[in-house]
Image (cartoon, one colour):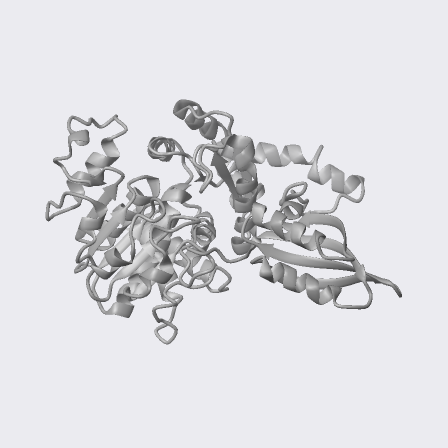
Length: 471
């Protein structure tokens, strides 16, 4: 699948060129002939003989950007200056900061914000711990916790390398839901230690967002923390993905005129995201689901599932085998998708091709969510499927967790919820789907944009109502 230039690989190149002649047009030609895209061209200084120009370019990769720079360097009369990677510049010094809500201008301000006035507030909370939600940042704070073991598309890169992702998550919490989120990158991948650390820091937060923790440990960590804490614990890689998939599927089924209880769903991927998607789809009414992993279709007779006990790494697969595949299918993923109504991939690139999609039922729905390379080329899938969605921003119908986690936590925090449950997630999915009106719904618009200003409020309102009903 050809990759288009992306702002993720955007750079600004400073060049000096002759003031006369064709140098400027040569710059654009050089970039475009190299497969890049000129997104900005600014003259920053001008003289009789020379122009200084900042050219902003989108490339497809780091190596591609280097190739374009060398092409520019080779233009006669052009002097290459500073090359700035715009993505790295945006991360320079971090992307978030703490700011005081009140100015500290004089002794009176200092006395109320800190000592001695703060002691009165401390004692009020000591007498009534619930006042922490009213009198501290706890009421609006979420801990974004990771061990860096399963960073999307990058794998086990550790806590320091995961920090830019967690900072970005915190920035999105603030931008879309006004929530103060704090990245906590833990230098351990021991399940017991992670549980103990999160339990210890929990008093300062109103919610815990687990992020990029590898399966199967993520299941146990989430379950133990939900049991131990009196605040909601939400693993976004599981449940955020599941909510957006269910919302998108709800609208895709409206497009093709099928009912959720009538379709056969085939899934590729039985990890954290795949398992959570499956459980939410079953709760929403899916009756016929088939899951495949790297060993093929999951079924009760598979040799690797024999003797798997509740504490083993295979326990999740055994649960899938016991709760799916009512027709007893065996074999490969490609065999399973024949005649299927829906394909949902959260696995690996290029596990299907156009012929496989063509063998699905009429009005087929394909969600190929592996990033950056989907399970099947979306352009190929669209030749026969009725609705196609991906995890990418350069195709219609992007399945993106940003649509969900800010609103979910906004609703949980506003309701002062102590937990998050399936009813709340189903409510979030319904609210997200309903943001797309009947007049807007079509095969290329089954899910709203992350910048749709109705999304966070709709999701938050639905979750708040469901959370209050559970109190």
